[in-house]
Length: 238
Image 1 (cartoon, rainbow, N blue to C red):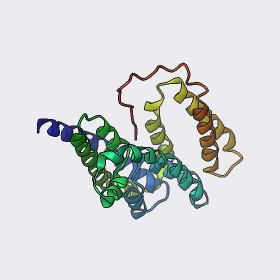
Image 2: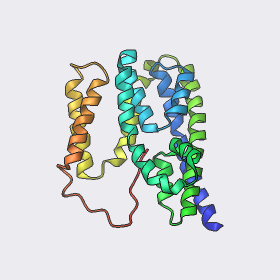
Image 3: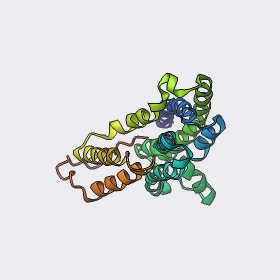
């Protein structure tokens, strides 16, 4: 029982820390031009922080004209959850309905907490407590942030027009620890900056994504990276 309490403690700590970011997302979504209810619906249905920040960032730059690019950018970042789903399939167990429900809660944090446990039962507890807890907390704080952002008015007055890009950079920065990750980030940034004057908002991000995939796929700069010791858990960042 003490081991299960420890998992609950770990999961709830992650829930509290992650849910706080929902305030930023709610405020940034409203600053980008979304209504309060639209920001809340995004958190309810999309529910993956990186994709949500990407959507808001592209939408803020181009408005309705950039909506297809915003959706595509968010979808590209959400693809990683498919890999998480395959990893979590034997963990969640149960029947079809249980797996369908688990799909919505399969995010970076729930996966990370689950795979860090040593026993199947503890993995289940870590997954469900973290996933459901963050879902509830993230949606509550999104509403708070959206209401606060709505009261603030014009985002340019407070410098919030550039906050979406800053928030997304803050999510990316902790991952830049190896040469391969740095190379992917730099290549994507250079390509996006080069195409920004010539393409409509959102499209430079998609072009940069293709470059990032190529650099990552061929591992051009990753051969000298340190080998991760066997059995160590991968770092996962939402």
